[in-house]
Image (cartoon, rainbow, N blue to C red; front, side):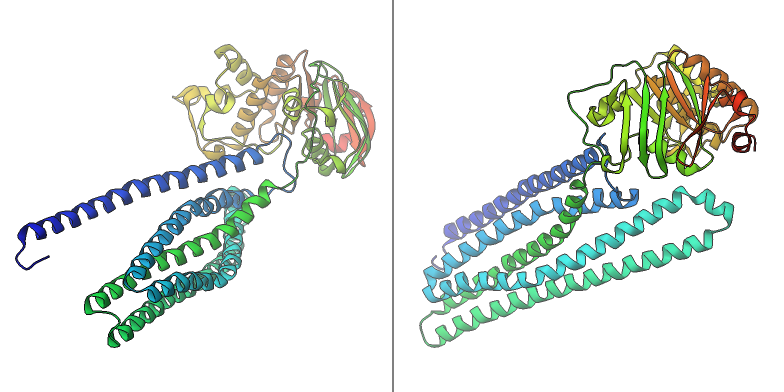
Length: 513
């Protein structure tokens, strides 16, 4: 462009402005697309983890809830960011190719040096990737362990206060959190070293290209204009090399998180089940010579429409029985047969089996919402059925004692309710489900005697004609049962009505203490 050529200058400025507009809009829409893909992938991974955890076939040795939360949040986010890293690889590679091609036009050896040297530098940086992966894996594991402990402590804070163990719990969390902090700093140091080496490497590469160009200019092989062009391109090359290094860091971190996600997804199921057979709906539950855990050759039958009581003085027997019927025991750990309407539970479709047999555990879990949504999570029940279930569970006062009634708010895990109220809401939820077979484990341990009598009467009336198994030591509930079984040493040792068995010392000791 000649000196004083105003039109040419205007065209150059306009072209430069247009170039920056294109660059700005390309970054805007490109970044939007990358972030959308990143979060979409993160969402899909979280859904996949959720489906695996909620699989009706169960999960062998499931991680603690806090660990699962860490995996479903931070680990999925790291893996999702691989898409961002991939876009940086594409952008950095394209920039290097364009820069190298421009240098080839100016001077072939310089272009070849960039085409050969840049990949070698990026490849050398990847030698540090395994270190990043190992330290990131250790960091995520320690953070997940700390999150799991925090979840457990928050859930059990009332019990900790009751036994005066707050200081011990705080100290335990402090140690675990300190370990997680040390792991995080250890990983951060590795990231710092990696980034430092990346910056140093790109800087040395820039200096090498500029020095080579300077030597060529000194020898007269490059003009001053060509030297300026080469130095500018060499400075430009430093940025894509840095992008490729950053992408390598993200890939290394994602590998560690991906391994943790894959470990959860690859855990075997508790029960394989069968896809073709479903229970007949009669409501017959039968155990034949079952041996698992503390249970040894246990046999019992709950006939259709029967209200059956089961007393197990040893809590381990009760827990094992409930876990077995709920399908929380791996098939290879069970000898004998568990039959639902005459069909082996191992041959049943897991989802169909759980619709046929509902097990309400002793530990109450309520979700945040209202009393109505806690009792009727699907929202499909009529007002009459809802009222009948609440009345049978003697939970009317939970509604009538609050101005919002059934819209009364419930905090996470029912923290705004008393222990007895939580038990009764959970019982109402189980009764509203109205399965052919309902198994209740100690459903009234947190209520007073008068309320317990009301629950016993309401339960017997509402479940008339439906099979119900009560694993309990409550005289009020057992008195309503048509038949009661006493389990000792993992097997049934006595059978009769509550009144008949009350003459036996072992039974009286279990239920009349």
